[in-house]
Image 1 (cartoon, rainbow, N blue to C red):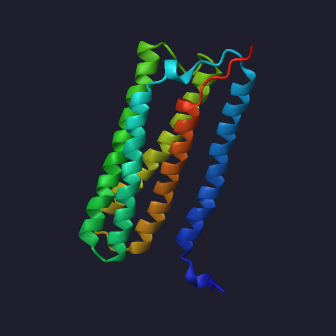
Image 2: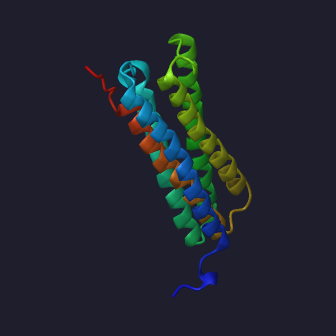
Length: 187
């Protein structure tokens, strides 16, 4: 039997938060699925979105997940300087992801004239990708705060890593749904 003291409160709190946050993402993705299934004129994501840039952003987040896991391992080994550098590298990769998202949003609006009010597909894209981007920005801020001071608490890095890994997994689902699933045309 696990005692209450065996699981740190920060970790329990983060799991509770992530469970509720997952429901928020699930609701948005369910709205996407329902509207996509009912809309005969849903645009083809391959024609609208920059899959190359989306793939690069996905790679940046996947690599950041690896650097975050390595930071946790370094903290557990009490290699604090390494943990700090890896935490800051993870934050830099997250910031690069956000910058890439900003570039994509700008290109959609300025070059392709696709804004949040263009159609349901565009509106959901901006809301879902933007909501995820907000999560990345929050994660980057937390990682900078952790890496900007003397990293010396393994538990703090582990809680931040739970959040960061959630952000990574959420993006893989979002990327698949928004960028890769083809439009279904009813005929």
